[in-house]
Length: 431
Image (cartoon, rainbow, N blue to C red; front, top):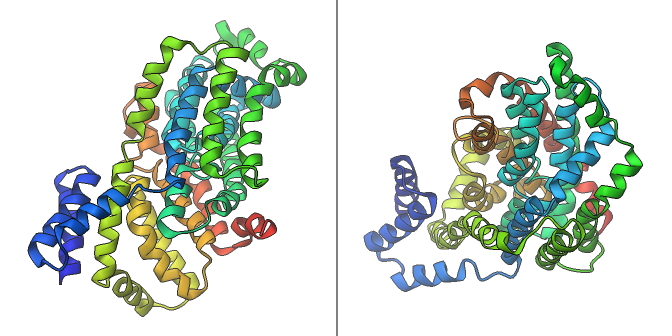
C-alpha cells in the first residue's frame, strides 16, 4: 500500500505539471508524513548524500567543456574536417551533420548540447544550400541522440552511479552501438536525399562546390587540435591514465588552452556567460539528490521486488522480457527526460533482467539507447525542440522525416538488444 502511494503521488505530481525534482521530493515528504516509517531526518540526509559522489563531478565538467568548445572554434573545425571527407556528394551536408555529431558526441556527452552546437552551424547551412527545413532539423535532432551513446556520456555516468556499475566499461560498451547508429543514420540520409534530390539554388551552386573541395590534408592540419579532444579524453580513460571525472577536468583545461592560445576565438569576456549556461544545464543534478531518497524508500517497501515478480510472472523468457522493457523505455522516452528516467527506472529494471542473466553493462547500453531515441520522439522530443528553435518551424512539421530516421535507429537498437556482442566486445576485451 505504502509503495503504491509513493509511486502514485510521484506520477500524480508529474501529470499535474510539477518539475521532476519537485515531484520526487514531494512524494518522499508525503510518504513520511503519511506513514511515519522513517524520520524526516532520513529523507533530508538522503537528499544531501545524493550528490556526494566523485564520479558525478564529471557531469558539470563535461557540460562546461562542451560550452568552451562551442565558443572556442573547435566545433566549426570538426565540421570543416567532415566536409573534406564527404566531398560534394548527394546528401553530403546531411552526412556531414551526422559525422560531426558523432565527433561532438565524443566530446560533450549530451544530446541537446550536440544538437545546439552542430545544429546552430549546420541547419542554417543546409537550408541555404537547398535542403528543406524539415529534413535539416530532423537529421540534426536524430544525430544529436548519439550524444548520450558515444562516450563520454552523461547518461552512462548517471546509470553507473545509480546502479554501481563501472563507468569506464559503460563508456566502452557504448562505442560500437553508437557507431552502428551513426552508420544507420548515414544510410537513411543517403536514401532520403536520393529520393528528394536536394540541390543548391543556382546563386549558391558554385559556393557549395567550393565548400566541399578542400583538401583533406589541409583540413586535417586546421582541425588537428579539435580532433585530439576525443583521443585525449577516451585514450586517457581507457589507458588508465585518469578516471572519467579527471578526464572531464582535462577536457575543460584543454578546451581553454586551444580556445585561447591555438584558435584564439575564446575571449575572457565570454567566460561568465559560458559558466552561467553550463550551470543552468547542470540543474538536473538536484533530481539525482532527490532520487536517492526515493530509491531508498522504494527498496524499503519492496517495490523493485514486486515489479520484478510481476514482469517475470508474465514471462521468464529473457528475449520476451527485453522486448517488453524496450517498449516500456521507448514509451517513457517519449514523455520523460532521459536523466530522471535513468535514475528512477534504472535500478528497478536492472533488478528484473539480472536474474535472467543480462549483464548490467549490456542492459545499461540498451536503456540509454532507448532513452536517446526518446529524445527525438514526440511529444517531448527535447532534441527536436532544440532543432526547431534553430530552424524556426513547428515541431509537427518534422514528424515525416523523423519517423523514417527512427526506423533505422530502432533496427540498430534491436540488433544491440539481442546480440550482446555489440555492447560487450570492448568491455570484455579490456577486462
